[in-house]
Length: 276
Image (cartoon, rainbow, N blue to C red):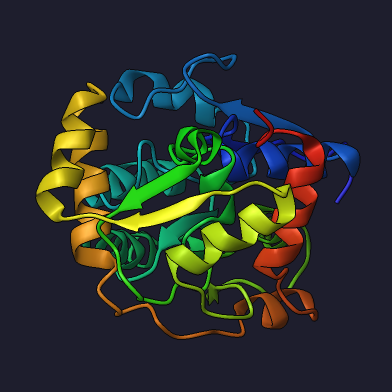
């Protein structure tokens, strides 16, 4: 690809994966358009009136749904966007999806049925949720309290997701592929927190709490309803062991192993973001 080609629209272009993808494409001289409410033109998932202008003149779309593809109604909204893109002649769509989430898998099927040249990136829990998401406060306070026991999660680094997204958008051979992206090993949340503690040299505890206590904590933070619903869904439904498997998606897409959680913890600790 070169700079004379049409820009790639990155929906969620200021988020964890979209921001990293934009940096990678820009470094390659590939034009990008950031799809966000603060973008130019503005894009808002809840305002279909903004979609046409955002899609105008682009050659491909990276679809990251806000606030999360697991929330009710996400699949239908993603379907509407995919069908509009194809109607506008934009065939190349890459969907960021989630493992073990009913709504996410529905969205995948709708994108497949849209007539697009699709690629799906079905991702495990982001490592960066500990440093760029809602868990950073808990890490800084020295205690992470969640209603999850010894369930293993193959945390995936968002740098790996961005590398895969860059590859599938700029190289041939990825149309019609579903890449399930996980890290190279399973860790419980307690083990992940312990690795962060080791990397930072701090005493960071993990405490398993009841569902009721977790719900009370969410309510006390006065989160938007969709975020409160999402956290409840993820920690009470998705983290039930259904995703305790490793996959070779990163290897298939990039020809290398996925980044280990310990490497993420060491690199992130060095940035100082977890320092009090």
